[in-house]
Length: 154
Image (tube, rainbow, N blue to C red; front, side, top):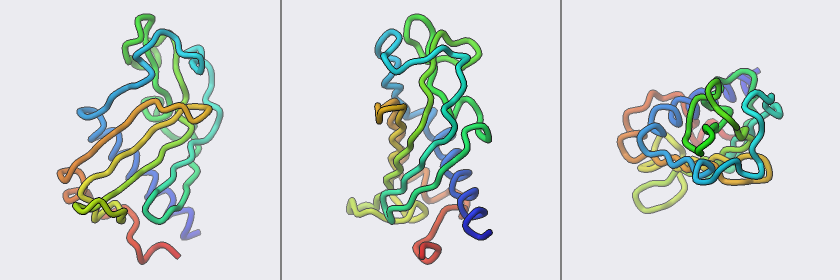
């Protein structure tokens, strides 16, 4: 039971980090082209899960996409390739994998709550990079303590 609750806290922390800090520092890599090969109809369902990998320990959490908002589970664009909400999109690419890399000021991998910077790499099917989200010191020091610490990992 503890691991289920623990996983939910980790997922919540990741969602908050990406949605909060990703807004200003995000590059939607898939939107640089018209209808990429791995794009789908905007109304097609998500394949089901998103695997989140944390580089510092390296652990994995599997999230059920149906439990998350579309803004987190899909990267969508209009006919010209501009990022847009799913309900207005021409095409979408489902997010199926997220790699989170948290580093201290010396560049060493550390737990997210002690990190000076966190990078989240967001991938679609086939490990195609969709987005890179960067958060600096402002994102790690002031966040609530809902992320893992080294003592939580067994």
